[in-house]
Image 1 (cartoon, helix red, strand yellow):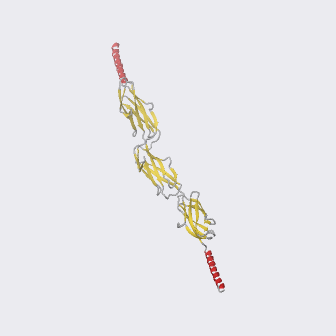
Image 2 (cartoon, one colour; image 1 turned 180 degrees about the vertical axis):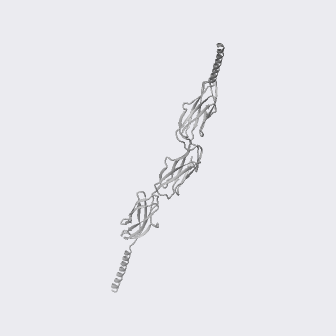
Image 3 (tube, one colour; image 1 turned 30 degrees about the horizontal axis):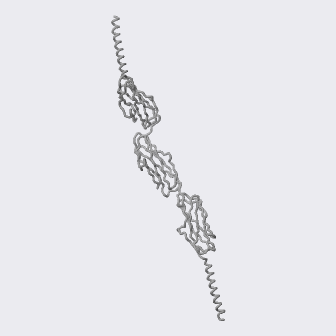
Length: 383
């Protein structure tokens, strides 16, 4: 009886051992594994991760493996390549391995945390990959400049370099706009061309040049130029600053522009001179001076103008005294209005006339001579 019971048991045991043996051989012949040294890594939003994955064939025959990325979160971009080409299947020789590259892009709009997806060799193996997103993602636009503040004169053109960053998951068409002070002009350019809008790919940037030109009559000071880039539900703003130091220019003349007058030798003449600030910066401490012929005198009232705003004028009275020995003719009196930055000259032509007193003296002398001749003829003519 025992022998009869043991015999079926022995046969069943042998059958199961053989079955397991055959199953183990099938697994060994079809064994494929996936391997990467970096199964769990950290990355910020918008980052691109490249995994190098080995497809290992441990069997004794060629294996063709279908590869696919599964369980990828919404918005994540994945691509499998080998030999520079996108692949879906790969064949591996016995006891060898083939390398594939998994390119993974983390979306910008994402919450901080750990995310797991699988690289699946269908029917063979699954490789879990974990990405720890290191910070909260954004859906925004950044408009920035390394040098938003510039200084120049009223004749300068202020040129700024601005970077527009698209921190969204989609391509954006940005409209460019500026709100400069009245009279100022702003021109945007990208890639060497004048533009009013630019296209920017997701998680990409575009360099933009901003040329700002002040009006001709601008005064010295600091001016704000807000600019903006507006996309689909997102945008960026930046405030540029232009500091105008102003230009210095001064003019010296008479109120009517007439630079000719007359004077009698030994007498004085008051001439009103006009000093005008032709620049865009205030003028300080304007000194008046002159250069006149020998024996002449020139004084000014006032001798110094303390301050003169851009575009403003003021009058200075020049008192000119001619040499009493000056003979009739034209004389030049040069006048100068000078500041630390600029100076202006004016040449005044003075026509000297003979004194009326000398005329009367001459007439009296002639009359005296005539009377003397008449007296001589009358006294001695009868003899």
